[in-house]
Length: 322
Image (cartoon, rainbow, N blue to C red; front, top):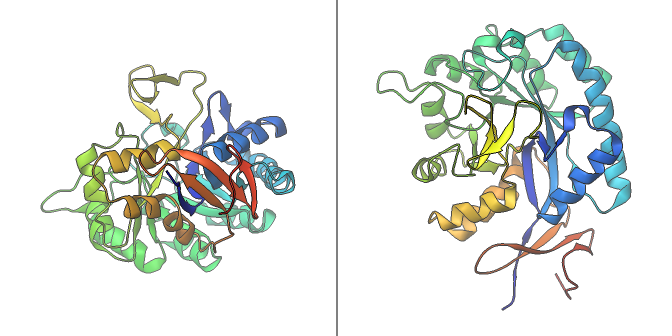
């Protein structure tokens, strides 16, 4: 049976894989992650750095910049679109982030980080309550950085103010945020009804119930899926289908984006809609144009059979044509 061809998968939230945490990975480990993602059909991604002391970010960004150059030169790795900073400017729903390191926005520090690493930071997740004057939201949006709202219990009106200031994404809808309430719809309600917001959702079917995933996919601004893959090291262990802390709390996912895509279709989501949520949709969030990367997907299972970069097949058994 002829495989289906699709644009390459694009993952906006990859913290790590296996025993590799990208925040402190060495060049060999970065290469291993890039090759692993490519084998799973992910042709481009955003390495994601979570809440940490402020002085930890610049060295991590230096390593990411070097890895970005190396991946481009290697030709056998997923390309690095830019870094996703998920924290430390979060709110009252830190989730697995270290609560003692969560803080209000330091606009001067953030501006200095962007100046010191031009074009590298592409996506920043923050909470409206951590940016009370919305100065950081406006500064990031003006600099061309995509602002995502997450890890927040902000009221609906405060979310709307952040959207007016330039926020355009909601990070892992339903997870680490206040619930949808009849009298206070909050971030969830805003994400579902405002066409200016594109929510992401973790589709490992552990973080979000399949029925809630389908609700998320009906958001007015379109929805994209992310893996939120994390390293299973230290206190974080793979258990019951996800990465968990010792008390069982979710710390992230172990499912990569190809399996998340397959989950959508098995849950009854239209195939074309699901593929868009894993490929063109996340690319559009960052304003990335089609670079010609393609994947061959099994027409029945959506398993990745082959991958092309720049017109050259780089994964899977030899196939002719694209």
